[in-house]
Amino acid sequence: MIASHWVYRIWAEQYLSPLIDTKFDLGISFSSDLLSLKFSSNDLLHFIDCKWVDGELLLSNGNEIKESSKNKKNALVQLKALNGEIVKSVSLMFLDRLVRIDFSNNFKLVFKGFGRFSNVILLGSNNSVVQVFRLNFKEDWNFILDENDERWWELNKPINPTALKEYLIKFKNIISKDEVFWDCFDFNKFFESYANLDMKFQYSNGKIELVEYGIEISKKSVFENIDKIIKQLVKAYYFNSKYRLLKTDLIKKLTKLNSYNTGLQQQRSILQERRSYKEIGDLVMSNAHSIKKGVSEALITDYFTGNRIRIKLNKELTASQNAEKFYKKAKNESLELAAIEEKLNNTAELISKTNNDLEELSKVTTLTDFQNLKFSLKEKAASPGKQNQSTARKYSWNGIEFWVGKNAKSNDWILRNATKNDIWMHASGVAGSHGLIRKINLSQLKNKDLEIAASITAFYSKGKNQALQTVMYAERKFVSKIKGGNAGQVKVQKWETIDVEPKDFVKFIQS
Image (spheres, rainbow, N blue to C red):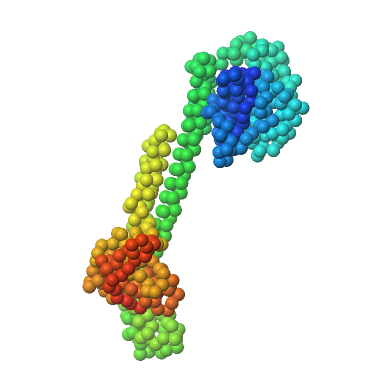
């Protein structure tokens, strides 16, 4: 608990008592966790902030509130019924977190500090509830103020120790059930200790607490520094909250990455351990004489192992055509493995980066350090290296590195980052993404790799649903931006074409 009844007494004496005979000018809020109050007297201005931290009410000296503040976004004017009214008195309830301000129109502003049930309540002249600041506590609309309670002490007036003594005796079980304690209880010393309260604040275990330490901090020290102490506690609370939130996000991210990495490793193991499609194709071809068209499976001897195995076939195809289908799949097995290896490498980098971020976070001890770390993480996320990773789709197979644009700006980025001998691609006659085969000359490029790149480029175009789509390709040095043209618009001086079936890379390697 941040604020006990001891703290409310200090707030009442230090913040609210000086408000007597001042005029209420404005109440305004910008969120459900902050209510700012403005009072004035002659040429003096008083600002009080009612701030909720983790649901608990804290009072502190506020920043200046100007009339123009009412026009700010999310600004909501509060407590209009008090505008222009004079503060007549401030009262505190002993041994409770309850303070009230009485105004010249007989309205009362009550600060109810019951832990996470704290609220600010405005009562009318007949003590009925007029306004509740924290609307989620609907029961506060039924709040009853007992003005005859003997514990009420009007500040700047003498304390009534007799009334308080009777109250303590009546409710002694709240303090102690030990009869010896009550036999030895000295009320004079009790009031003396209450009037010369010593206290100390501390922040630990994710909670803000008030700890009493006898004479370690004097009453004078508390009165002089309570505003500073409360603001430090609020700062510590928000640091802890933001720290935990970032740490939780990083841990969640790391958990997902590790899970994804495990799945990729399992996929790789399955691919590496399953029977090679080439071997199955060889078995079908070696038994082609006994496999007739129209059968959906064949039981043949596996000369690799000596066992009899069943091979599923397409009954619409001949044995040689089925074998050719297996050979085609065999060619793409390496592509599928290469794609998984690339994902594994990228995931490993992200896991390493996230672990490093967690290690850096563990070294943070102040809010300033935390803000610097968050800024650093944001900078890393926006760094050129990071942008390069996310600006284009990237694929690789058989030593080929291939980029495909995501949008018009991405197409421009690809063009800017290409070298003159890189191979540029685009679906002919339709809108689409730019493709780029990197770091290889056209004369060195195999026809199969050209076909794969063209198929992917066609897939990321308006011609993706065509049975065949023409794709133009050229060396980057023959491609240039149109002066004054929109993003992605280019002119090509010299090119060739290829007709391909549009295919997504994943579908392509599985076909």
